[in-house]
Image (cartoon, rainbow, N blue to C red):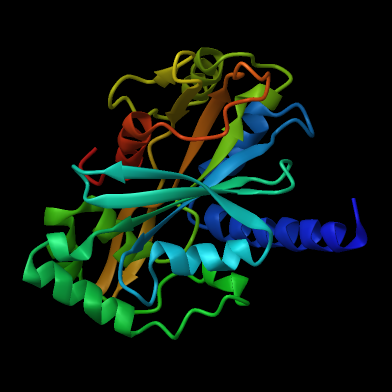
Length: 273
């Protein structure tokens, strides 16, 4: 590893340490699940996920530019028509670093009321600078009321989540491939349930299979208090995902995502669950 690469590796490692700290502030179950599954140094983060809007100031490509400046590259594109989302994933040239999955809401496909609330939120954000990686753990930059949150929730759970939590990792993901004491997602799920945690059962506890080269499961999001402009409400925050990747014919592990599975993973923050 050259000196430049080692510096970049450290920058990304430090960034994810900050993203993790921001994530566990509202996802205390992550520490407990971490201890439940890990034997020490075997817990590797497969990927994190971000949610945003397709507004020019904060769209997917704006967030991706921060990652690209740190050595990440575009690696796949996905469409979620029922949720009105676009998504891309990014991988670092150093394969030991986590992948990043970013989705964006197609704002103009929603009602004028929803568009106006989102526009107000986005207008409160300063220009996102490529050099400001702290934006990825900056939280909310706006004030919304409980009624505005409910207006968003009625049309898009995704939009309501972003309104409440802003820019933070929606989830971290345990790489099942790297665990010492677990070989399958089934075994991980059994341990997580035995530990008292609820799993996302939309589409079954396990999404995907060896044929699509990726199996995924996830907890249901923790609940945490959000300060709206007119009071506090306890709502779903973030969750923990588990992923097992299967080898391609080349022998390398599949590194992409499966839209049909990811669509069900989004349900992990469902406020009605």
